[in-house]
Image (cartoon, rainbow, N blue to C red; front, side):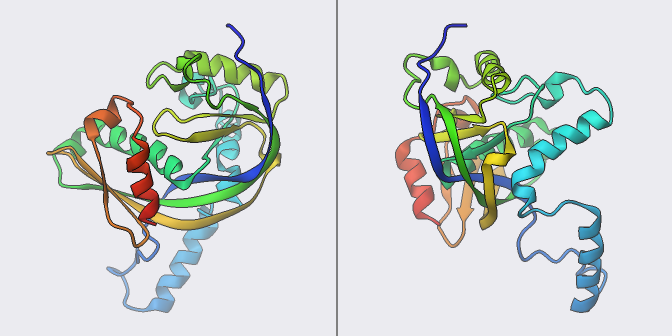
Length: 252
C-alpha cells in the first residue's frame, strides 16, 4: 500500500454524529394508558434496560457494541467492518459539519430501506435521527484534500484501501484520522480511541422519509423545510453537491 502524504493536524473542535432514535415527542404508551404519569413510569422501566440515546452513549456506543460482540463470541470480521475498519477495531465516525453526518446516515437509511422487501411494497418509510456532537481533542492523521491523489478514500463501494489504512493507523497507536466524506462535500473524523472525545450532547433531531414507489427522499431538520436528494445519485455513491448540503444546513 502506497503511503499517502502523512500530515498531522492538532484538532480541537466538535465532530457531529447522527444516530437512530424515536421522535422526541413520541408517546409509546398512548394506546395503553391515558395517564401521563403511568407512561413516565413505563419509560423509566424501559430506560433501565437499554442504553440511553444521549451522552455518554453518544460517544461510547460504537466501542461498547464492539466489545459486547466479542464478549458474546467470535463474530466474523465482516459483521463489524466499516469504511476504516476491517472489523478488528472499533471506529467512531463524526462529520465536521452536522450536514455531513446527516448525509452519511441518510445513505445507509435509504439503502437499508430499499433492501427490505416488505418496505419496498409499503408506504413511506420514515426514520428519525438525533444529531449530536462530541468535542475531539487529538493529533489526527489528516487526509483532507487528498481525494484527487487517493480516490480510494472516497470510493463509494470498495472499502479495501480505507480498511488497510485505518488498520495501520490504529495499530500504530494514532487516535484517529480526518478524511473527505464519501457521501457529501465535507470532511469526517474516524476516531479509534474514545478517550479523545468528550462533552457528548444531543443538539437536534432530523426526520428522513423515503417513498419506495417513486424513490423520493426528503429530510426535515428542526423547523427547516424538507430538502430533497436525488436517490439514484445517492445510491450510486455520488457525493451530494455543496449547494444541496448548504440548503440542508440552512434548514436547521
